[in-house]
Length: 250
Image 1 (cartoon, rainbow, N blue to C red):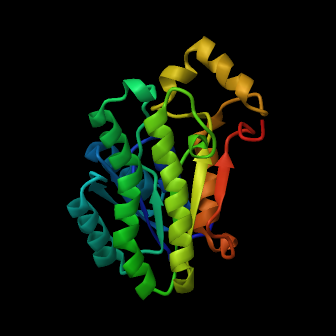
Image 2: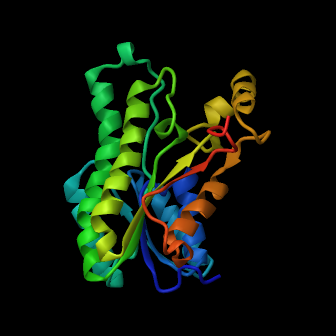
């Protein structure tokens, strides 16, 4: 398994769910992985799992809305491994609140964690990628960043912002051989979605929206992210890749 041999990757929100799957998969494919999450114990556990399987990884407690934390993480990655080849902006939260009921505090929190964190990550990683003559950035959006999502105005706006910020960065930094793409998961079973997936009525609604008759697995999102992070996608930038079981097709 050598699709990321000699590459160094930073993955945020990697203590659980899709981020955890991405970190473990990247390490299996030969990457040195910088695993970050607001939950330090969770990322320490992921690093132990990676190391037990023979991989290389380091853990950081990381508040993704803190520019100071971003500087610490990026400098730590470069100091430990010498470079950054891949950035996966995976950390995010959901908010199922209608637009008129959303408080300014809720709006700002969703925007900061889902969108501002992506800006900060790219701002501090891209100069190192420029110095290294290239890199791949994968920003995790959502199907809500492709279509309107009822009852979740702030979340939809934040994920749409991730999509368009990714395109802007792809255009600006293609000359530096830096690729920037977004991934748009649909109904994926993760700890964050478990209360919905485990609700029979909600699960049936999910399944009524998809072309494939099941919810997705976090490992399936990780495989898509791996493709965009690897050299297999060397001529792909500025695109959005849905991993949604056909929701957006319907």
